[in-house]
Amino acid sequence: MPNIEMYTTKICPYCVRAKALFESKGVKVTEIDVSDDEDLRNKMMQRAAGRRSVPQIFIGDRHIGGCDDLYALNAKGELDSLLKG
Image 1 (cartoon, one colour):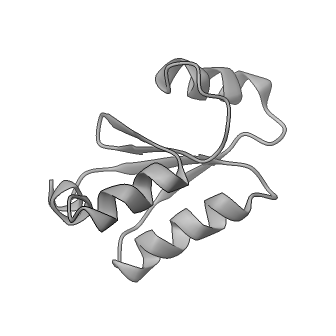
Image 2: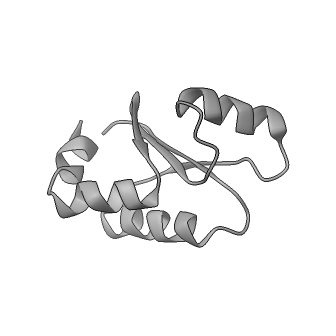
């Protein structure tokens, strides 16, 4: 299973929703809180092609995007294959 990283903030309903989808699939996520750390947020933005909103989700080296992008992948049936590596 590939490493899953999700950049989040303390108060973010989209982050909660994305975590819930991963939990429903039994997947462990490494959460990186950028709430109070501008350096971490800048790193996230570099990795996410300038996107500043959270969550920003990475599965392995692939940038998935935000919560809506994650749910769209799931709806198309593509998320499970990504999670298997």
